[in-house]
View 1: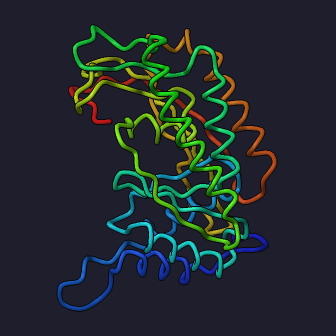
View 2: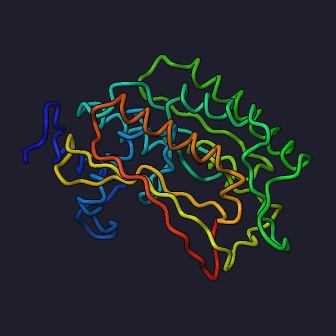
Length: 272
């Protein structure tokens, strides 16, 4: 089946991703990004542009905010993302987002009672919903992020903008999870350890096909986990996430064949 109307030029999408990573022939250059990964990266950006998720954590190589901004500019030239996009640098990571949906997502978490925050600090017997005191601390970080995103939204002169937020003592796992649109987000005390080892986790995945880029291309839109023991307690927020995703999917035409699935896994160690 041929790509549908408005199909994007595949060679240009691949070249743009490879250029962003600085990959190419010649001594000392990194291995070129595989074409399949380049097309998937374009699909992930398109999922943000189409409103299927508020943000994307860029994990495709060593590109920083400046390279990523150039990459998004190339995608716009190819016709992939006509709307406004923003690159947010945060603690060594870079996220691609639309300021408006990202603002709405942070506000929604700040308004939620109880907050959809799961405490997985090391030393706990198991994961639990955050106590009010810890939730307030996270809310303070999100309130600071909200101010930064407001400034980013106001600075809309360019189609692709960028900014850097200084996270201070923020838990970056928690803040990034909120921006990525996860319905429930992990948080933990200082340090990298957590109590999720061998804990049954329900992993939710949302995928869809993107014939606008290439027939048969499946793009992972979401992948996150929730402790299986808390799924009943978090049932309302999980159901709301599912319904909101279906509504957003119905309002766009870039992706087809949405599939939302889940499975329970237990791992000897879980990195957050």
